[in-house]
Image (cartoon, rainbow, N blue to C red; front, side, top):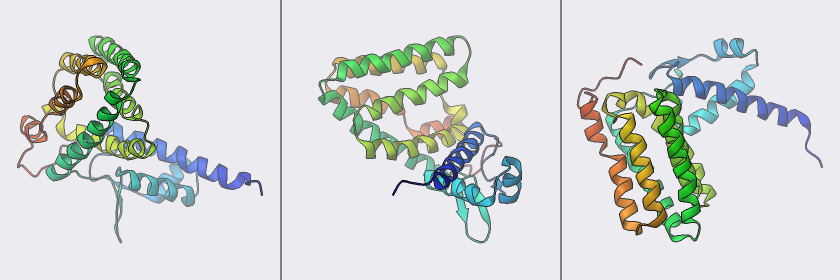
Length: 229
């Protein structure tokens, strides 16, 4: 029996709502610890609470919201252990992707694709557009993981990358300069094209860095405090 249009429209609405809330969380409009109120959001979007709840549940599954029983739904406040865990899982997934990419007969094509993303990142960062440069950073790594050709790996990585964005708010003071960032992505692309897999993995690990060092540079290690936004 053909699917009816009602459920499809409802699903599409919840996806659109999730996208709007996701953008607000990742832009910092909702700071860590902020509570999202169903009634206010439903009025703001002009929707019923059904699709709104579906959207919020989707974001809970992505790790961008946390549901506290009898309290409500909140933007996560990432602890130092959370940040270290995000770095650990992200590195594990990207290393797995790199090993498959380097072993494939498409490695040079893939390297050219991500090198093109690094070129665009370099141009916008030199123009002072850090926000767009950051988006190209995420696109570079997402494209690399997707090139491994594993739907499950890509799906898992999408969640980790969303949580990585939350980490940026906490680690902002510990990040490297824009110029270093673009140069590192160019170097990764070159290595993926021609270097032995162990050399690529070593460079990728160096690119990620040590989350403890980032926390220290950001002045957050051992403080137990959250940034203001």
